[in-house]
Length: 395
Image (cartoon, rainbow, N blue to C red; front, side, top):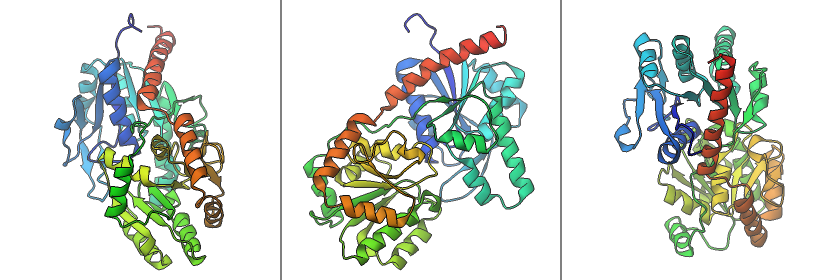
């Protein structure tokens, strides 16, 4: 490693703070760890009127965008000007790594037309969910799928964060090879102190002797949040007491709150909203007995590793990407994709504190992976991609 050239990597992402989502989190960790320990990384991302880039100790290059006022704060990249492509060329990158197969990947394609630079694309999200839900007409959907597929096919190497993600790649028409490159977790392995637990319980008036569940993530229906709420309503109807922490924010927030009231579980739900302080987040995982994450949308489920960092086990849908590598009753709990199955599983385990603790500890030792380890593995692969690119292009 010492004798090899240190690499300069472009980390491309359509989302970066103040836009917060899973891919934004991934881009930050790649940039931070590469710059700290391995080589040089520059984040390439669309402009955002609320950006606070001075807070970061690495370079962030913003290109032209269209701003869409929304709760989630996304801006849409507009990478069509020639001078933008020259900007990237002049930075002399060894490799372009895009974490978004939309605007920024297209930007990298335009750059590569002018100067051959090896490219990697990590496919993080099941884009067909968003395309089918948000694009109203078939011609527009067909165009979006074509655009997506062309961007994927243009990469020299395609990475996925879990084997299950490959199904989504095949659905959008990609037929090529791929590498599984899992994401890491930026929360350190932590045993949350009894004092911190007591503090949070006092803050929300949580009794000591009842089961405590948590959902963390974007507040969007397609994460199967409805199944969580319906399962909790069934438990309450059976006379069971519990608390459910809802941590996060998103487009369907108000509709979810309405559903909570309709289900009759408002007194059992603690709504924290968006929490950016990682230590505070650790505390909420630490007080929880179980993470409820029945999403079949997520390709990796970072929150499962975050919970594992605090020895909190997860309840996941059998066969989902988030459940990949999780053994039922050993490193987590698995159920079917239904409210009834969630409720039945919770009934079996929610009062068994010793089992929950034992499975949480095993999750911490077996399924947790740090971002340091994940990015080091990716960085090692960059050298292979560059070598393959040179052979392929006779360089």
